[in-house]
Image 1 (cartoon, helix red, strand yellow):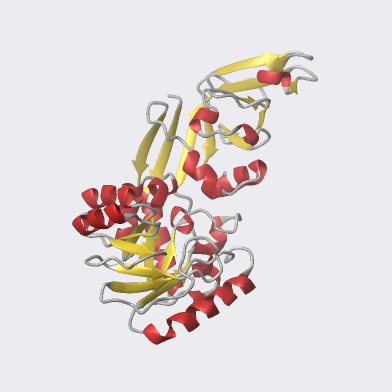
Image 2 (image 1 turned 135 degrees about the vertical axis):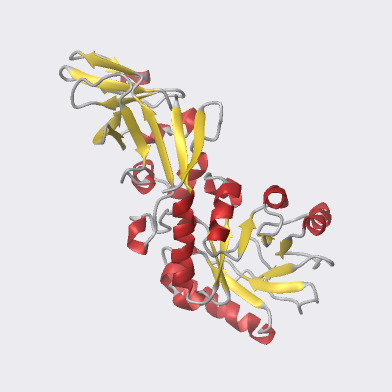
Amino acid sequence: MRSELAIDVAAVRRNAQALVRALAGAELWAVVKADGYGHGAVTCGTAALAGGAGALCTATVGEALALRAALPAARILVLGPTEADDVRRARDGRLELTVARGAVPEGVPVHLKLDSGMGRWGLSELPAPTRDVVGLMTHLATADSDPAFARQQLQVFEEATAPFSGLTRHAANSAAALRLPESRLDAARCGIALYGLSPFGTDPAEDGLEPVLSWRTELARVLVLRAGESTGYGRRFIAERDTWIGIVPIGYADGLRRDLTGSTVLVDGERCSLVGTISMDAAAVLLPRELPVGTPVTLVGDGLLLEEHARVAGTINYELACGLGRQPERTRRSVVET
């Protein structure tokens, strides 16, 4: 086994239930774009619906149609921009679309998106809703980092939507749903929190969330480096004294990025550092002593958070999650329930 990535569907359900409680009456719409942030859109979407989500959200019509095939009764909203051919496919697939520019299509449920400060997709002002418009939405840029600006966006959105009180309004993402009660409105589009990952880069347990993903491998080789010997490309790690090194059979092709050198893994439950250069298919771990080949190594899980790796890499947990174990011929995926 190179590595195994396990998805805990019971944790997805519990996270959905926790978000439903936090929303205090607003609907939970589970965002499962990018294959459920790397966790599996169908697997996690099914669990989220079982946990109380009222709808699923994707980025593209293609993603939504893949979900529709597996979940024929689910309400599915496409959040990203669409083209003319997408409208036909959305009608056939019983999808709802987001309109952020141009004319409002007919014969398909539509959500009008106002750009209230994200400066990306969105209408500069809302047109009079047609009969096909079922929702009004905006996208908060700083709910995780600058709540004051998020509140400014909310004020713009609420003023613009005040004449259309009969339509569903939604603005909150995970960060806003958890920390900005005034943003919850009629529904909240939650993604990262559903997977037990913190939108704030901290311990998800602070917001009552459980990590869904675990990733494990094992020591494929164990060797001792004598003083002056090195491991890996570029000799970035040179032993100062006799040092035990373990080699794991995964690398950046599996999602263990080169900039994770110096991060921590668990070797038989003990924290150990990744050292040297992480290569395409292998990485080195600094061991406390000689250990047998086959000793289990946890890369994510058992209390080791993806947020820790993100801090080492100077990125966010979203990016790391989307890149883990994407090739089934290299990484075995499993679904568990705890």
